[in-house]
Image 1 (tube, one colour):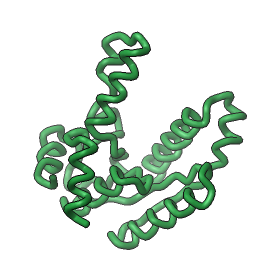
Image 2 (tube, rainbow, N blue to C red):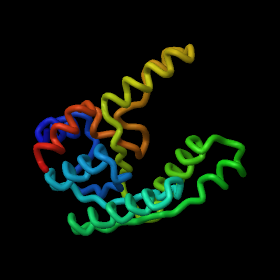
Image 3 (cartoon, rainbow, N blue to C red):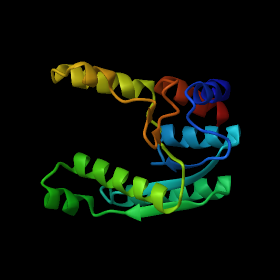
Length: 175
């Protein structure tokens, strides 16, 4: 997995050795594997975590886990709590849409404020296929069939080389 990851990052020119990357880490399998791969590859990174305060103690447990992960890898981290339900009502959006906008707005503001060069998300090939299928069922054009790209301005998706199943197998093999 590490070789596939580093070859993909290199082939798509996602990260140069001097760049410091902000990792969007939820605490789920995908973002934890991404964090491990960044560490093993020797990339410079920091961690950011959004607590949307939607699942009570479970949300707080995710936040605590991400803090432990940052401590384990000895990297800085930022956490932000959101009143997502209130924000969704205020915006007239679904909770999912509000959470996505809050997340990206905060991550990109951190990138600019702290002079990080990139924001890495843990989207993988399975996410891309799901997005393409959803877009297809909605009657999308060519742009919707594309889904999302490996690199979009400051946002990179270095796990698009792997499926969810491959990430899970790697996590199991690494304990």
